[in-house]
Length: 382
Image 1 (cartoon, rainbow, N blue to C red):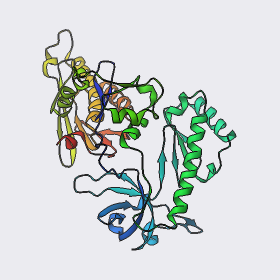
Image 2 (cartoon, helix red, strand yellow; image 1 turned 135 degrees about the horizontal axis):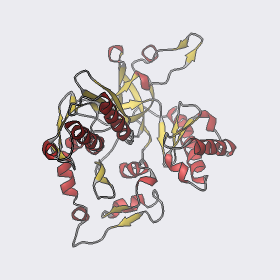
Image 3 (tube, rainbow, N blue to C red; image 1 turned 90 degrees about the horizontal axis):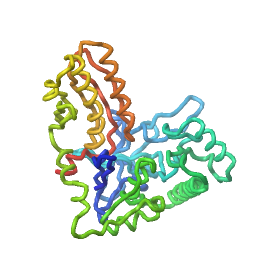
Image 4 (spheres, rainbow, N blue to C red; image 1 turned 45 degrees about the vertical axis):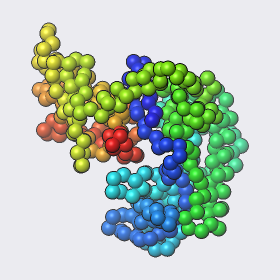
């Protein structure tokens, strides 16, 4: 389990990672065979192993354009077809793992898309840095670069020497060329590419600027991460008398992250209720109603703004996804409502997973959606 701690030693993110011994499909590329094409659900069922079936959404199948426009995947896919697919989403509850035929390799400094075009940049990189990086990439001698699309990650903006970025781009173009070439001669269910260990992949997904050091008390993890983090950023914890879990009160943080009630500094609190269809969050003033020297409207705005900060944190912490409905304390002022929504939107945008503030309904319920990439924390802990 990986914790990203803030300056107050509170977790901003809890990432549950499979045991090193466990076989993990995510990121692996296989020769898949089409078992069934079902236009009504906009997808096809694919086998990537003798006992492993996955789901391919039509939107994840690359189509070629002709003079009449792009052909539909449902017209192109046939039972028995074989082609490379990459596992992108793990199995969740009754749902099969999802795959994409739009192959993608992710590194520390860039992402390479097999059916992409051009060079794109992380939204966290400023425009000046993007212009500098694009010019440097265009001038660099990177063979086959134009065959694929690249997204330059935040970590690349911290490099003084861009050779690690160029080296990663060259490596990815060579690897994709190799995958497509080998795929022509391999039988169904063959593994063409095995992704990095989930621990390494997770650490690479966290921008270097968000942490000072990585501390682990597992020798295997320390060995795995040695070549993937900046020099001096990795520390092996060896105090056998006082465990790392106790030092950072990790068991307490997990218990709080699974609790139904979350207290706010002002004395208010949140009630978080996951249901089958959505997650519902209720904001209550609690002990905050006893604060002296504030009007009712000032109090409600204060509690709601503190709740907005904590809700964004709890969504990341618990890995909530899908529809999230928030019942803030009702406020009479339209100006106060706007201040609250702007605050919430700002905090939600700090999430590395795509999260969107949709709107506030006529009943005052705030609607949020978050992309589902893995199971929620509560499901892992069960």
